[in-house]
Image: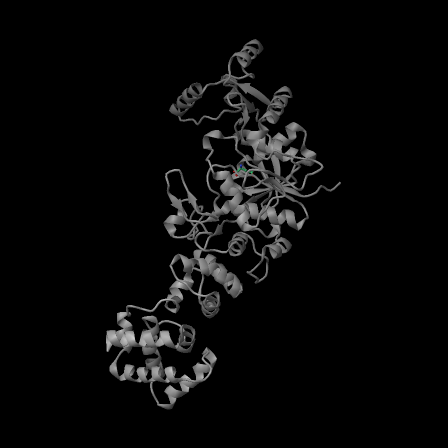
Amino acid sequence: MTRKTRVRFAPSPTGPLHMGGVRTALYNYLFAKQRGGDFIIRIEDTDSQRFVPGAEKYIIEALNWCGIVPDEGVDAAGNVVETASERHPHAPYRQSQRKPIYRQYAEQLVENGFAYYAFDTAEELGAKRAEMEANGQTFIYGQTTRMGLRNSLAMPEAEVKELLETRTDWTIRFKMPENRVVKMDDLIRGHVEVNTSTLDDKVLWKRADELPTYHLANIVDDHLMEITEVIRGEEWLPSLPLHYLLYEAFGWTDTQPRFAHLSLLLKPDGKGKLSKRDGDRLGFPVFPLQWVNSEGEVSRGYREDGYFPEAFVNLLAMLGWNPGTEQELFTLEELVETFSLERVIKSGARFNADKAKWYNKEYLRKKSVGELTDLYMPILESKGITATREYVEKVVGLIQERATFVADFWDIASYLFVAPTEFVEKDVAKFWKEENYTLALQAADFIMNFEGEFTPEGLGAPLEEYIRGNEWPMGKVMNCLRLAMVGGSNGLGIADIVTLIGKEEFAKRIEYIKSKLC
Ligand code: GLU
């Protein structure tokens, strides 16, 4: 029987989600949706020492912003989302709330000889480690050392029984088989084999907090939640032999998920993993949303930096995957159709900040003037600018092609809302010469007296004809007018500017520059 595709994104709420984590969630989501399957979010919060308040909410909000919405999991308010499993519920989705589930599984492994109780204290283990290191050896709790340590394999049964009852700091460890070759398959990396001789006996469950460790909780939950594929970061590849052996020990190999380990996102120079600290250091965000830590330090987010979620999703999708064609722009729906794990690259994907901006510019170009106006109006309001929507729409229409972010609109054309009070010195030196500005002032009169249609098209050609007809230098005259309108020589066409700001404002600006520079 073929099973319904069910994949999960399983973040630990130990801090904000790095963009690499969002990519993992995205690939899971695309994989599930392409197959009509379920995408599940499971919060792996069994490590209370690394728990960071607010991180879970942040993660869910970040995924929501990207449009990566789960069929099962938790929402940003912390409520259970379970649209996919009405007839077969899998909640809760937070491992801390699943606490009572895990112990029986750990005990089952002990009973069947796949795990054992360990009583060594942290001090005892520290002393053992120090002793071995002094002899130039490295300590691992495993096949070569376990019989010399304090556990149920090495100690008499009666003592074990007593310690289990009297102490509350014991653990259950996996008994790594000796000298076995674990044969594994990865959907991205292909066949992998590892000999167990170098692997340690990982702790699976802790009596102290009655909580499982990552490995046990992850395998038990993937099984109970009927996960069919595990798509996750390559940092989990070293754990894969243990995970295979756990499925085997539980007798769950028939329904064991298939695995796909994604390569890392690399720094722009390709040297090493893109880390949480790189963004602020190298001048781009590494987090989807802004994050403020407990010390009040702010890390940039793509959302607050002005990226559109569609652009962010698109650029993430292309970091490590390609469609095999020249196409670079994909909506989420198109990605669902096109994505395949077969085309995910094995090597690390290098992040390119310029390319990220390029994506945003492309998406900005595709937006409607109305949508961009909605986004720009509040920015104008925050600057104390009052302008009609109709006016702002005209401005946006004129400058949309030049901007990468909506916030650029202001830098590109603030002069369409406020008159310049200063003039760029080098432009003044270059253009504001008497022989030019006397002509420009005559051209200004032409504009003031112009009686045709006062639109960019209506005014543009007659103005140019007038200047050309007089055999005046077009560039110099226009740049003098632009200086008056903009404060510098960079800006939109004169006809565009004056027909927007209107004759009255135009005249004021001409008078102002005359008062300052003539
Ligand atoms: N909780 C793990 C993490 O934070 C999940 C790894 C997995 O997907 O198995 O990355």
